[in-house]
Image 1 (cartoon, rainbow, N blue to C red):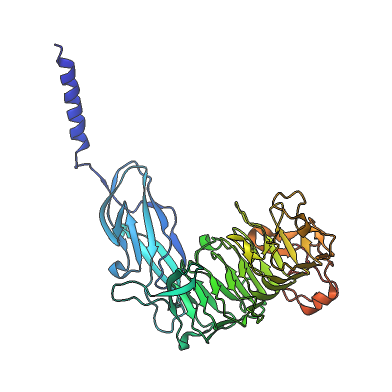
Image 2 (image 1 turned 135 degrees about the vertical axis):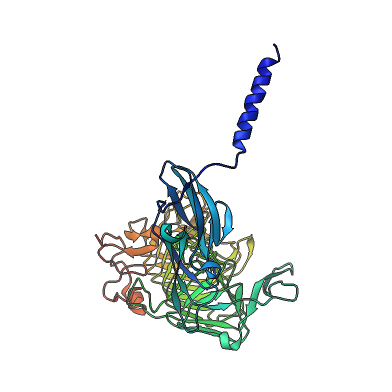
Length: 512
């Protein structure tokens, strides 16, 4: 009698196990009564040869019966550029898919259009997911806009490894290499006919110039960028755009993911690297966004030739710095350096700098250690060894952000450290613990003229990189007219010579 209860349990478990292993469940026929989370799945714009993000379709069985879907597949069959994943299995056709009563099924969708017809700049590519056949067939349409592009990328060696180029040499003699390639002579002129997609670092060879036309769109893959070698140069010929949405004259550098979810994702690609020894680089109407470092510009203070002249341009949403200058010679007018994960403008190891009507504002949405503006006459890793900061002039500028202080001045007291702020808005708190040398921040001294401290800039939407200023701004009519006459139009082509406001924009009424 003592064994009876355990035996009963064993028998019950055996029966349950047997029923769980049955494979002869009865399904009702799928008779066209499936419902879907959407009738059409719109996949965002992609370049040919670049895969899309993954999109989701949910299939519902709202009946009281378990059903067996005879088939799920793509209308274009194996030739389709779409790929599906149904119930954990990848492919383009599936059979006998069970869907239990009042349950749902996920289908994951991706696309990768490998090529477009000749002379086709963009194509609306469509297909459909078909459920069942004949009279019970149901469809969900798939739609993707595919753009053609010019792809530039490193070659592979016999072992399948990508070509590499040298970026620079450390003081200890170690060399830094990245995947990249030299642009050929017939690749040194980027037009606006098609977008460009760059894999790795496109290198401008020595004694050559890369010219980029107005309206060009340059897209960079992860860990990619442009490398301007010593004695080479970069010339960006953007023009003013009448349409702020289309930006038809602007040259735009950004990542190669076109989906809206990537539109404000920092760190998608590398940087524009201008090497020491490169000179006479000129940029007009360029937007750089979502890089790791917007631009890195290296120079030599012993050579007073201009490293970079950049006007009417903007760099924002960089993971580290918007503009990183090292012993460089830079002249900038109407330059907007927006939010970044560290400093918006980081000038180290001296140099020569002149910024007129610049907005340097860091409203990074997250933790950061850098200031909007950092000036030093030494390297970031060495507070003693340095080089002369011969000139750092800021005229009619805004230096601002969402931290307590947005100006950092650091001198090793051995090298020259010259700086001058004239008619500028500065955000700075005198109790800032990082201001170890208070003499550098003597706002009543000769290095600061007509300064506004800690006022209200009244931006439109700084977290969305919209640094236009409203009519309640404290910077209205605070600019020097002689400086404004050097830059008579703001970034929106508004005349500023009679009553100049500070920064890149003249004030305007905010949209209601």
